[in-house]
Amino acid sequence: MPDEELRLLIFHASVGTGHIAAAEALGEWCGALRPGSEIMKKDLLRYAPKWLARSVRSSYLAMARRYPWIWERLYKDTDVRSGVAARFWNGLGRGVSRACLKKLMAEVKTFKPNVVLTTHFFGMSALLDVWEHSIPIYFVATDYATHLLQRDPRFDGWFVGSEEASRQFRADNVPSCDATVKNFGIPVSRSYSEPPDRGKSRKKLSVGDGEVLVSITGGGIGAGAMDVIADSMLDRKDWRVEILCGANRSMYETLRDKYYPFKNVNVCSYVNNMQDYYAASDMVVLKPGGLSAAEATACGAAILLMDPLPGVERYNCEYLLEHGAARKIYEIRRTGEQVEELIASPLEIQRMRENAKALGKRNAARDIINWLIESLNEGMNVV
Image (cartoon, rainbow, N blue to C red; front, side):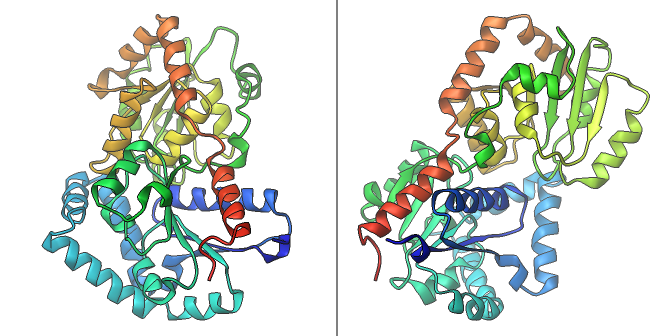
């Protein structure tokens, strides 16, 4: 297939940051592997009424940061195929997306994609109603487990982050799932394809010889009790503590002012070189969002997990623990002690790093794009 014939449409939804980052990674690798390809990326929420998009984003952030018990109930109620809640939310989502996405349909019609990827399920029910069996549409998971709304059998295939996710499809009796569900991993940026050298990253971040570096990150949305964790390390004067607030501007400003007098604590907003923090840190304290976990494992970081959100983050946490790639924080106010104990055991730190690196799939986005190219070349799923 000539390069110019690949017209890839990538959907995401601006809820959190992981879905966006995965979409960017897929587009980035597509451009690198097929420079002549045409790529269109669309935020599905941009085509919803402003009040609805604002409600979806703000309610997600509120639940993630303040009301996780609401999120847990919503997640469980919609993850049961026979449940009343699942039917209600699926029907509501289909009705809303049909009404909202007319403008999107008009725009992408002129693009004429020959393959579609989506990293979020918002609006996809309505799109599948229109495009099923006419354009190959694939769902790309951004966590180690999947939700029922992501396993809509009308998708032509799925790219998942773990073998555990593949088992969910087999449990659902998805037809031919051994052929249609591919465990390539969670797609991360091309910058993770070659993990940075630890020594070079420490030099970039001006970490002193023998200095202990602990990075605390709540992912792109800046969630989690990062201040409580930092408080547990204030008396470690020979440590350097980096608090990475992501896009949470309010948290950044609050913590910047709070920790201004402490020379061993540095507060950052969004950074574009997270791979250096993962590589340089003696310990990374992480909220287990799928993309954050995938990036950290790609760099072989030693990981402590904090505040998993009920639902998929809890599954992510369990997956990392099961594979020995991380430890969990049980008493968040004593995190400093736990970090100190681990650092005093270099063999355990090395084991964690090796397990993380073995689990990380730093070329997942490349492998997804390569599979699509090969499939299109072979005429698979092309009408």
